[in-house]
Figure 1 (cartoon, one colour):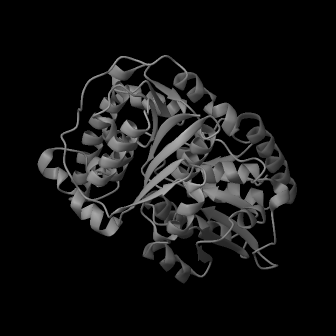
Figure 2: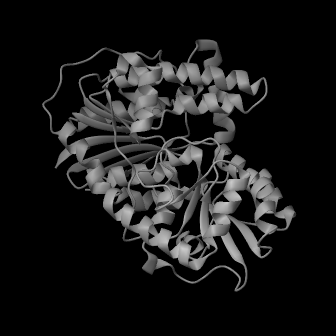
Figure 3: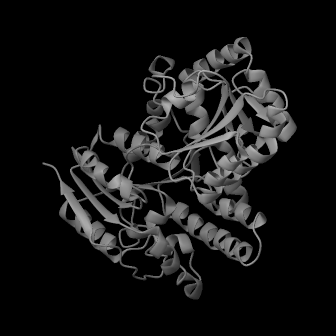
Length: 424
């Protein structure tokens, strides 16, 4: 099998959060045709036991553990250089040495990069055929953060939006193929970087339709009485924190006025203090990390995605639809779905409409009808293999001429010593 370099900013296993779900299925798809040499960072100690498991899918797996608590302050050095803090955050001289050595020793000619910040490791290798999965327009996320925070964070977020967009534009310009998760994200990027029009392709997320299947519901984790409303995701991620807080404080009182037995369950790893504090309201349960999210979704009266800041497709929504559960989403999330509002999911504009939509899902007949339709739509349009077929076409194209040399000023931020895993 031909060797291929795969770079990801976060260990793509286990697939238990948005970016890791996409990167895992991307790696799984590529491993069918290529000998994978993967380099990635581990930013959660809970993922360390899974490194060995992922190594079995790769000819070589290089990991470096990083501590977000120390890396974030270190990335502030970029303020003096005019760089994006995100790029500086993921810079490691140890990773660069491994990339350079792997390309030389294994005659690497093709590379797939997950997350734009990892493209910096290819600056010395413009001859490689490269696909870069941006996933979302990350720079725009920082603009949205700026609008919702006070100075000085608003200033810092606006700066990051500007510098990261400049970087994303350069990455796209240097790539053979660049990906975003939805046509809406492509249109947004092209509006922000018009010179790159036609250079980015939409490749949607998929769902493991066998894993997230109604028959895999498992035992009911909820009390026998009451109506369970579930929100899933990584609960140290600010948009999820904001969404959970808004739903618990603004929407739940409206629901409880009609259905006093309703309860809001926040299910996901690393709940921030603000999320934990919501339990004091009396109608909220925060579970933290769970071994299997499927029973929590499958046995809920409905799932919600009340995000006010969101980029791309929300995997939590696709998974609930695949489990044939009714889902109520914010207008922010609705535009990314290739499905019909009112038939496959419900959409809400504000707290009142959110409450009304959730209350309608408490009707078993209505919930069942939406759930069946949602499952059918997932099976029709959200399969990983068909979504990722475009990558194969690009990787099979003839090698290109060497492009421009490094566009990022070199700097060194050392990560902890790498862990190298080899197979075969």
